Length: 358
Image 1 (cartoon, rainbow, N blue to C red):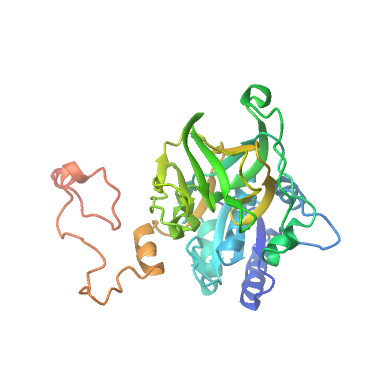
Image 2: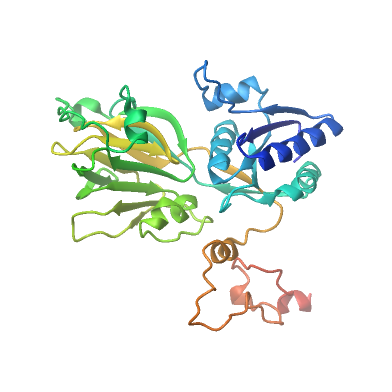
């Protein structure tokens, strides 16, 4: 893809990220390409929506992020809403989602501009809710400083049955990794009913419920004991966190099955976060449904994705002191048999016997 307008999301508190962004800006100037910085937070102005950000920047077709995974998620949401491609430059500690390092910025931009990069699509989540998400006054300060004052007992919202709310309100939000429903007060569990495709599966008294994409399966869901799900597939993964119930397993739902969470009458208030950002607080009777978004995240890849290599590397899965060193690949030095030719391989296979015969 030729780059016509370049957008950048920069972690301003990291000098390495700022320096790498200067490199990208110089590259854009040398190629006659407009370059804009997106998602700049100004204390005297409200934060703009993803569509407003893109419009102000002239709708860039490539958004490059300079930071860690958190910065990448900010830029990825901007890209997904506007149909742009996203490229992550890692200056963080983990960098599970980012693609390149700071010394690869110019080469990567050349590869994208010259059409030598590929685009990999990832599934996203969006939401419907019984009412718009709202943040009570002072809630951010309450969460920042620990427990703080105990909130008054929540009132049960009357008349919140499905016959009155219907299909709910479509929310203009996107989650790349996950949607998290978690308790606000230490001494009050979140009482949550989880519905799959409109049918009650289980009622939980828990610290939280995580609804994740395959991309987000290696984030909070993984830390809570959930499975690793290949990003090459579409699925909706939900994982309970510290539930007071015998059934504490993750459930992997089909991609066309919505997962809805209802706050039960005996529950404390519940915070809703998207990709780690607090978006609202629910009261008893409220519900939120998470399901596959119609748009997809378009990730720039300079080489075929080696997801399992990255998984092994980031979590040091090959470092067990009780195990012998294992070779990084299983790569037979012979053509791929016909019955395996349709599989995704982590290396360039030799021609099959059928191709040899041609």
